[in-house]
Amino acid sequence: MRCVYCMPSNNANWLDQENLLSYEQITRLAKIFVLSLGIEKIKITGGEPTIRRNVENLVKSLSSIEGLRSVSMTTNGLLIKDKIKILKDSGLESLNISLDTFKPDRFKAMSGGIDGLYKVMDAIKSALDENLMLKINTVIMRGWNDDEILQFVKFSRETGCTVKFIEFMPLDGTGIWAEEIVVSKREMIDKINKDFIHHLSPINNDKSDPARLYTFDDGIGVIGFIPSITEPFCQNCDRVRITADGKLYTCLFDKSSYNLKDLLEEEKKSDDEIIKYIRNSMQKKPEGIIKIIRTKLLRPTLNTMNTIGG
Image (cartoon, rainbow, N blue to C red):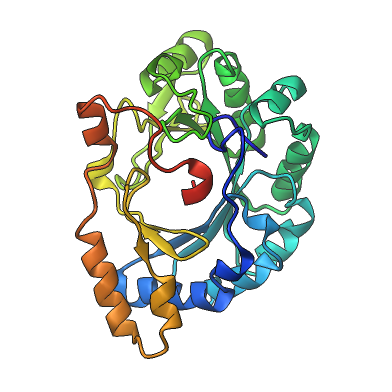
């Protein structure tokens, strides 16, 4: 898929397979982060994690780490239907499926020409049938899919899965990001409260969670908002990202990365040395999108979402 808010429209610089971290290397890093650096949750994301062969083996390895509270995954839903049961049996606790529209023609336009809505809906049904904790990620873009907000609200109430509305961020490979395309959290809440019979009320949740969660006055359905543009939460962010080729990013908007793969391949490097390197890297964590907003540099000039993960 080449979603308009993520992938470059012309060409991507694909990684050589030999440069990817092995599952053993990923697991070693995960153990370091969990056992020595306080990480409690791991999400396998992308790109698209289901294109990696036997990804359930990675889930199984990660879920066996003592002290890790959960292993989750984000997917576009195209290839995961037949893997849902084995992933759950391997230790996957929750699944985020990206879905931006219920209209086949619009799905094709937003995904870069993929006619795959029915596959995604089948995957959602399979996840619900397996009683896997399911969340739907929806990037709302003005003029593209903002007229379907209420339909997603009804979907949450009917299925019981959380729908998370994400403000369009300047991480798109197509370069179409503009402030006027952003639909703010406040605008979405006002629309839902105006046009829906039941009104939203906030849920107390972890302040470090990027999604602000709400339910309705009748207690049915959960809606989340990720207001990265209009209400940045950088001061509470405690996330780090490791790319498929072993680069550590301290922030989605970080220009710098830190090469962990080289350390893993230097046999004499101990876990303690890797921990020290990670700590030093984290001390260089930038202000994030807050500085970018303040300096009016809101253009997709840094990483695109396909390279750094959701």
